[in-house]
Image 1 (cartoon, rainbow, N blue to C red):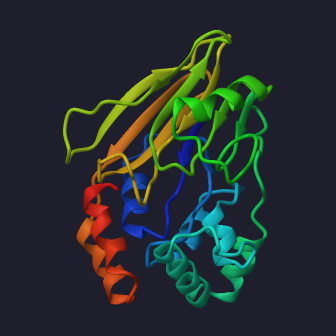
Image 2 (image 1 turned 120 degrees about the vertical axis):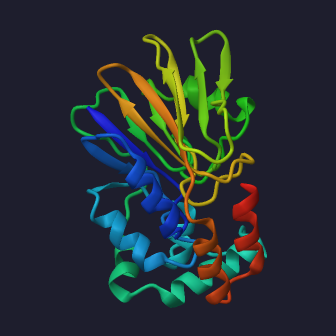
Length: 251
């Protein structure tokens, strides 16, 4: 089975469309949450995402925008974007956001694989460093976990003795590129496909991944998108200017 992995779209329609246009053939799509927040196209992104399939986990911004989570842990800009999103999402899409499932979720035919937003231990936990990854790698009984939330593309893994981290290295800053990463048998993996709509690894290009379960290979992907249109939408919506400028820096 070939699984298209999308995460942290954050209402960035231009980035989502670029990822879908560049994606190789796939059998199923799994969305790892934070469909909305920050960007200016929540309804369009929700509707496009809903049309891709049925496998979703909720993200913290999805919960915040739909009123399931208070904003005390959000920084002021993220909180303003969540409130703006809540006010601009259609009633139907708001109800859909509220009904998104908590991870982990599972897909028939993918044994030993689970999908979460933050961590297999807590949906809102950030797995950013190797230190963050050690406990979920050791505690989770499921060998392969796909997660989002951190906006950092790459993988953590452990052979029960020595945990390690992998970040894909790309050759350019403005072209579509892919990097393959094999998942070895007998090891545990936490794999982040990266953020479609707001990368934070210094690379402005939209990020996603494809998992080939038969070959046990994750293909990490980066693709350029119409950055100016995404920024212009944010500014026209009177969202904080920082949400537009940060897209160009990949931060």
